[in-house]
Amino acid sequence: MTEEVKKEERSLNFLEEIIEEDLKSGKYTQIATRFPPEPNGYLHIGHASSICLNFGLTKKYPGYTNLRFDDTNPVTEDVEYVDSIKDDIRWLGFEWKNELYASDYFDKLYEFAVTLIKKGLAYVDDSTSEEMAAMKGTPTEPGKNNKYRDRSVDENLDLFARMKAGEFADGTRTLRAKIDMAHINMLMRDPVIYRIKHAHHHRTGDKWCIYPMYDMAHGQSDSIENITHSICTLEFVPHREFYDWLIEKLEIYPSHQYEFARRNINYTVTSKRKLLQLVNENYVTGWDDPRMPTISGLRRRGYTPESIREFCDRIGIAKRENIVDVGLLEFCLREHLNKIAWRRMVVFDPVKVVITNYTKDHELLETDNNPEDPKAGVRQMPFSKEIFIERDDFMENPPKKYFRLAPGQMVRLKSAYIIKCEEVIKDAAGNVTELHCTYFPESKSGSDTSGINVKGTLHWVNAAEALVVEVREYDRLFRVEDPSSEEGDFKDYINPDSLKVVKGYAEPAIKNAKFSDRFQFLRKGYYCLDKDSSEEGMIFNRTVTLKDGWKK
Ligand code: ATP
Ligand code: MG
Image (cartoon, rainbow, N blue to C red; front, side, top):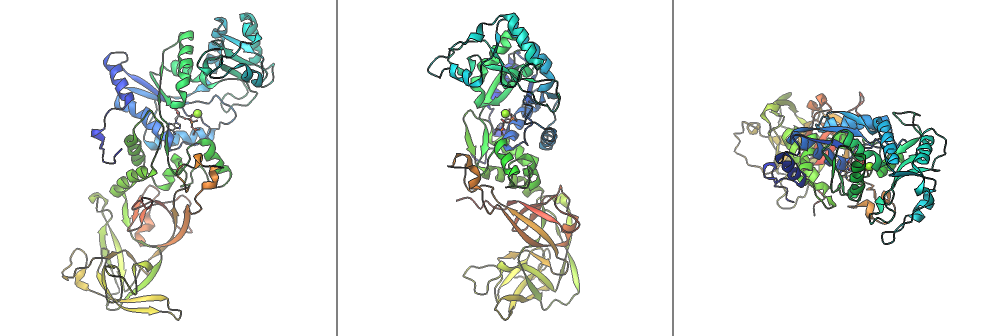
């Protein structure tokens, strides 16, 4: 894939082709998709791809998208996750038609199960899970029927009602679809559709002690909602046969399942289970730690919804798994931030410059907030006799073609004047403490009549007003491309240098920073204000560097 592919040139993906055909043939006049998260963790960048796909299709074509919480597993789910998921989808810029919960269909799903029993298509099985596994066969050997398979409809109805009534302990019985124990698709060998679990559910409380399995809930929920295109990831390909079987036997609305490849990016993990470990074991400060690949982490880091949508659009959808380079995500981010970020000057490791021939008290220099966006307006920067520049923008014995500051050399101070280094002041240990320079009053940016040409431009701040801020320099969370495929535990591959905290000396305009603002600290990178900021001090997150430092 090339980064140059522009939106209008992008061809239809395979789902768009299917949908255009369906609309053209009159099969549907509008489409319905759904995004079905399990509320057992925060959404990550992989989910963003599914969100952009599902919601994107119904933005493009007539129809709507439901948000359906797939909350059929009572144990791992939580309202905290429900709230964060809604927040994240809205932040990404999408709105659902209906907010729905698979658990709202528990009564309906129970009826469906009873219908299957009545049709002789489901039975209560008393086997333990070990016994069941032993009878299941292998991909090359058929499974075997057990004695429970021939139970009468009445006995099954009675036992299933008693399962629901709470008469039996967890794991002692299940309800299974009665299909074919010799089926070539292992998932069609009498799959379990209900299990006993005496557990409190975050929405239905203690009403239920039997819960439908994923396959028993998912397709039926799609059907209840008249979903036309039910999009999921590739691991569900083998499930499609059972999905269709249930719809056919129950004679309900025929939703169709389509599959696309999971999207994962390198130098991170995108599995909620693994992300939860990082949170619980304090490798990160929380789900929204700016190093996390979660939507909330990316948001706190300073990502924009536009850049994430653009990324998802560019990678498109595929039918084969592959890992996408995080460099492309960062490329999309830089592209957007360059357009919207306000430019500010912040010096990280200062050395003082004294301008010996500057005779005014001070002056205010006016400069653009963002040269890419005239509407961003201007700001004022104080300038006086004492300023800070970056220590490593000076070299006492520079090599050839060194265009920054050195004894006898000239540089431009960004949006200010040209200065020339006249004298280097050192302490007893030989460290540079001050640089004494002269400036050229007629070289002021915007009205330069000095006729002097310099190659280097440095960022600077006025010493008297420099505001000390904390800067959190983030890097990739893992030091290998695919931590999950490495030997041993994925956490062994965490990058020990994923966070460096440094001090910054910022120009005073930074005082007005809001959380929604995006900044480019000149020659440094893109930054945003972090929520940990307080009266005591401002804290900035490095969103991304100006250039990709990882590129070979
Ligand atoms: P995880 O393995 O992180 O727990 P999941 O698939 O169990 O992911 P769900 O909450 O069930 O998470 O996912 C909601 C939707 O998002 C599903 O339709 C799922 O297919 C999709 N999805 C999850 N991860 C990805 C991914 N990496 N790329 C694309 N789609 C994804
Ligand atoms: Mg899942």
